Image (cartoon, rainbow, N blue to C red; front, top):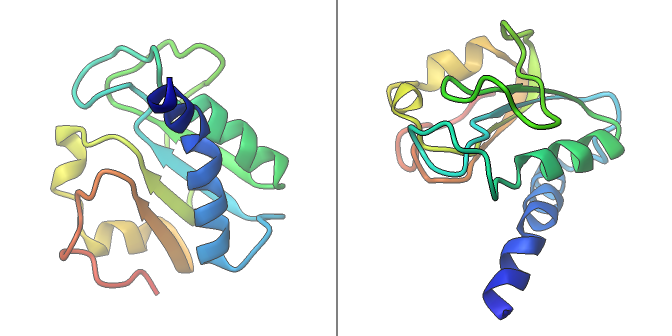
Length: 132
């Protein structure tokens, strides 16, 4: 039961951490959440905490876009048909194969200034230097 409690609080923890790192309350910022499925390279969204993260970010005043190459019909979440940059916050939440080859130049191309990249699965650890 303690494991469930940790999982249940993870979305709020991640959002608080991201906002803290941004040094902002989120008002007027634009966010992109990449990956909404429960695990990489599948279309199963059960137990995913992304819908909760979207709600939390929107309550902070952010405009949130969601994208996922594997999930078409998401319960309560509508993926954008095409990205609408620039973004102030980009969160890669699932380690889909399609995201593995992305680099600094890609993230800079869709970000505004010194945007924050939240790499929840550690895909870019040691590879992405800075977006600003």
